[in-house]
Amino acid sequence: MSASTPIRVLLVEDDEDVRISTIQALSLAGFEVDDFASVERARAHISFGAPLIVVCDVKLPGLCGTDWLPQIRTIDAELPVVLVTGHGHIAMAVQAMREGAYDFIEKPFTTERLLAVVRHAVERRQLSLQVRALRDALENWHGIQAVLIGRSAQMQQVRRTVMNLAETSADVLIYGETGTGKELVARCLHDHSERRRHHFVALNCGGLPEALAESELFGHEAGAFTSANRPRVGKFEYAHGGTLFLDEIESMPMAVQIKLLRALQERSIERVGSNKSIPFDCRLVAASKDDLKTLSDQKQFRADLYYRIGVAFVELPPLRERLEDIPLLFEHFTLLAASRFGRAAPTLSSLQLAELMAYAWPGNVRELRNVADRFTLGLLGDRLTQTRGAGQVMSDLPQGLPQQVQSFERAVIVEELRRHRGDQSATAAALGVARQTLHDKLRKLNITTDELGS
Image 1 (cartoon, rainbow, N blue to C red):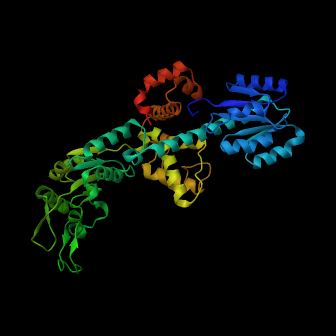
Image 2: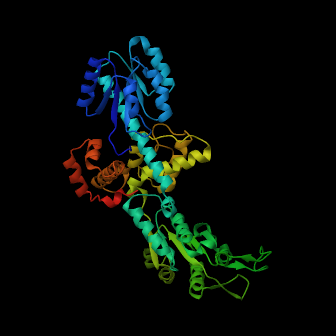
Image 3: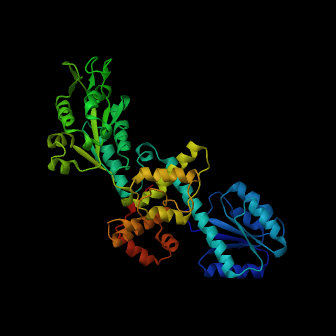
């Protein structure tokens, strides 16, 4: 069974009166209950990934609750087991919690105590099953899906565009805010083309002094300038047959833009200090965080160079515009960090996930990865984004409050629908709304089944 099924309560209690009253209390609170009088009758319902929690009495005829606990943990160590104990067996229950029980309830218990413990256990189970589903999705993704991660409509469009352009020879201009993954897109264009057998060469124009720019791009001969002790191959030559990626091209000095334009038009370069023309065959992929057309209109970027490289475009959405991708991305980065640091991968609480979804992410995916690293290292408390230098919450954005609320609501509904495999009844129950209310929101927020694919 999978996380698409609502979490049920498996109740094991031999006292019929207690069992009936417990069933009534849980049913009135909206929980679905399977009840048994003994472990022997209940044990067949335990399986790895079963969408349930266990509420079991400690003292039972046959196998007792504390002896059943290690058997359950052998099958599924993350399945929450709540033990029900008499006053004289509290020490036994505490020991069982040390051995992996989720919690215990002391008889006689109030309905409030029962429901509080069960709600928390159900939430824990929902989160653990959601994490498993995310990890399964990550493990089953291959190719471009495993690199440009996301289920949102925006990222599906990005992947389609990249795959459509990959096998062409067209130069590509990638737009996106800082941290959105522009170099990843450039690498995908390279890796999914015939040029993947040759070099992918990346150069950040933002950190390129004008005096060294020509040498970096075109190379130089020995003696071309004071420190040129030996010949040097430039990026264009080194990328021959492959892909040259120029990041932050908007910051390239004007004088260098003229020479870049000439090189692209002639498809040849001259090393600094040489008159020999060297032909090259590489694909140019450029990236910018600013609109080059606007910059060219403002005379801050050469218009002729813009029209030369502006053949095909890939636009990367900021993370705040694809909130539904946050759970999958965060889980991916957490798993990577756990492997890199030799730590167990921690699990988010529902409050922490809500916090991630409400944050503005000014640093986009790069910032999300940094938070996942700190989360894995145990450097954060209950609040994940309230760290030194952190950005704004969504309410601080210039976007109006109704749009912010709508974006957040849309992301939550899409994620819940995906977790329940499109089952609207189960999704409505999980969200605590009527099915008609959910249906109205799907229409209002324009949520389609295309967004629910894995």
